[in-house]
Length: 94
Image (tube, one colour):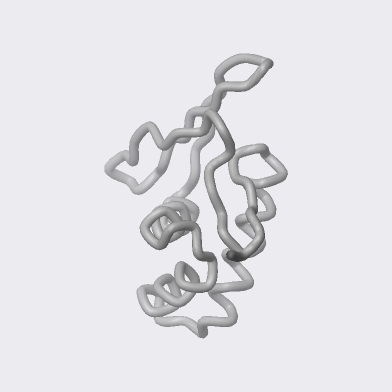
């Protein structure tokens, strides 16, 4: 599975506490969304690995010292929440 930002969604900044601000333009107007440090790490891992959720989960598991299957399950839940919010889109695997 490949994960990409939805059209019009951009990462604005990450603050000193690790919170990511996303900005999204939609028909309803601009919106701002914040991710906590865990969501920020997930966003960065996905973006650095071309949206490959499997590789991103492996990297996060290594960083967090956790089981890769648990990291993948957490990442999948987060991806679903972000997709439901209109911030991410999931593409079929190549």
